[in-house]
Figure: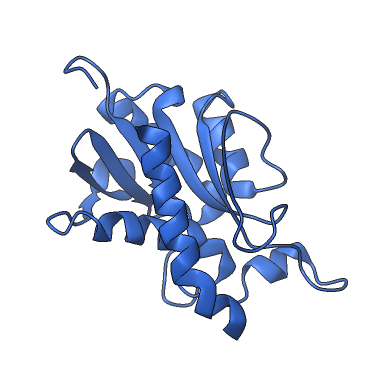
Length: 178
């Protein structure tokens, strides 16, 4: 990255508060924590102007909105404006119902697949031209409502595999940014 290049903005999606911390919808935040653990001298600090927690690490801005998932767009847009990051240099880490648990997929642009956090970001940025790092949580069992499923904690078997999934997703992020 040259000195004149804008930073990459890496955003982990989730909902605030202890109630939501262990849920599938907070997988983006869990992956962001893994990324942060690889930079032991970095800590997220409150960025009041953007309603986020953020830090700068070697050409990256790592952040998590302090808003609920469905309102992620405003904080992401505010951070992008503050740091002058164009949408193609924004990477959003999120949970994905349409991928089996443990699968990871990165893609530039694309649809929101019914994900309200992505929908909010797309609307706020005015474009779909940002990178998604999708982390599979699988489909709900039976006829369970997807909205209820994403707000449930991971199963015991999933929790055992979660550290591997977060590590794999952080590795994919590093590959993407290289």
